[in-house]
Image (cartoon, rainbow, N blue to C red; front, side, top):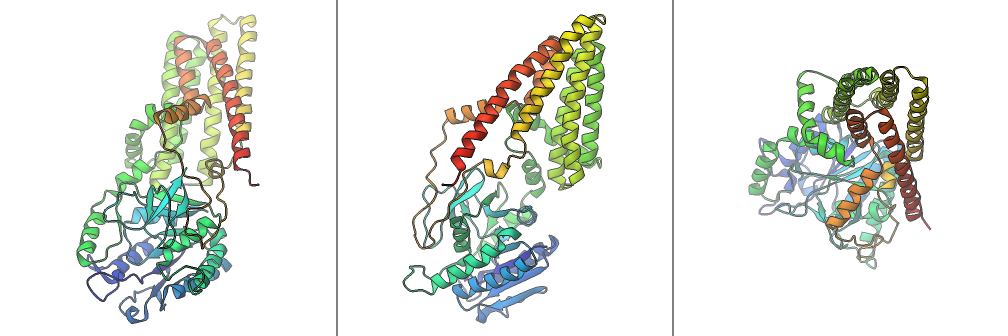
Length: 488
């Protein structure tokens, strides 16, 4: 269960009350934030407030701690983090004046065993945080009142989720920052502790995932007018549509991205309205692939075309089951295993159906059968070797070099070089690489097209040739990334 630390010390503009106490609908900004956290099963709330405003910020279900200054706030965060570390619980650190919807908070609270920061587009108006730079879905540089960032591409509104494994480092970082803040020679003046914590974790080498807000609004109002505008924006946002769009997995091949994902979200909504679970959709996909294999086994031209269409529909539903799981947040170990096994069984069944159909088309010729079945076995072996090369590769570790620890007191942008601007050529190279790797979408298209227009032998030779190329590309890429990301 997540522990939340809410730093409600930011001063509002135009009045003596803190920003967290500004009117927000029928309550205050802080009350609204605490209510949403309680809805997300985060009942352990610790509110940090100035002594003069602690009474005004007392909220049912939250423990209020008086912190006279920023160094005291950091030490209070460290104390909560140490307690959470003993219980092996993740910690959520938030500003008390954060106006945000339930969907974005849910993405942080239920982020698995990851450390993540909420990041908003840099053009968000009014500005709601400090600049950060991201790369491959990670925060690689963060700014504060003291630290600067070169080439920022997002801003950090102050919402940070620290995984249970990194909570001890959070406590250590908060204590160190508090000590530096009180050291006159360290050039770290008193300031907002939230961006400092992100700077400390990033510069300590902790991988911090960047959770983008997308079209959903996030605000940190400083006046009553801004609080009213923020409330209207947050309550009026279509969170369901945003969650549906976010259910599409990034990093798929061109075929899945452009030939399936453009309409699969309609199937996701259709499946949800009819009460279908992701596992049900997986089983329906498996059944369609079995029927496709049956039609392939007929060996007729009509059977080959029908099998190709059914196999494509099976792949479309294979995309839908994952999107439905992410949309409804119905994840399970059984579902993950079933989806992976169904993918393999569908391909193996189609290979067998094509080989049997080729035998039937040849009039049960043993000579012809002897030519096709070895091709089917070879195509299966190439597929197995390619999967073996990619097996157990950590998706979070492969996307970017691990961050390097660097000084907290240097105001410069350290540790990560400034990324070059992406060009159309870079995008073309990216999609060419994705295509060469022969992901499941491209394999489905290859099987469907060659089977419908040619025969099983052409399908198997195509799979063998492209599969060998994909194995070489995958192995070369893995070796290159291993060398590039290796620490000295």
